[in-house]
Image 1 (tube, helix red, strand yellow):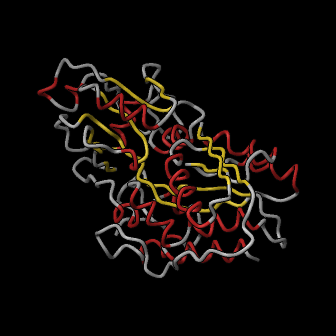
Image 2 (cartoon, helix red, strand yellow):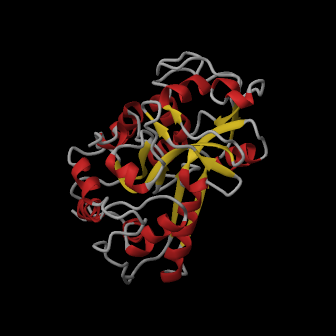
Length: 323
């Protein structure tokens, strides 16, 4: 059996068991043990979300679903990158801080310095950070070291410089590799740098894009392109490559492979909130999170192309927020 993914393993000491318990079905569906959302009285006002571009579509769809129950509530969403979430939470300009990576220690420390406690990270979805190529690219898969060779200039993950497709596809010899990625404000950029490049440096030839959609559009319009973003942004014009630690041991970026640890670039997607220990959260923010972690909210995750969280993760989160 494959070991659970390092990025997911760090999120909780018991997470491997949680994920493996939910991986029996090949079809992506919401855990039936997750309850449906039940609207409550007294939910009014406005809530702001500032953070991840990867989560931008999900946040928008969640807001629309939430508004169906609370039409008078205003939900404002700004998705310019995960690095914008911590300052917004610290300054109080946002109640919701979506991030496609875990908050860094220095970001946590700045929040704690102001409030006296750490922000609460809520696992709202699972993502396979995908390596995309044009739909007509015949490549069958890549190792993590080859991904390192494509995107890195320092090769800390064991890669060798790949600038010509002929090094991976003999029939494409002479075709220069065209690289697309995210900008440094992105949590996807940070996660990819840490896990695919082992904190190495990106090549200066990577065309940095302001959003995941722009990466996909770039790859779709460039036969020689390779790029990376969340699996929820895949379209019929591109394909997500299977990725493996070893040649020939490639794993599709599927739900089951994220859960069982065989896909090496799986991660949780988070929404961070300001929850004071021992004090109730404001009703509006709490109910929004309850909706996100409900049957309706997690069905939106599936519809948007990402993967839902297991029921035990959702249950533990709600219990934590209502203490």
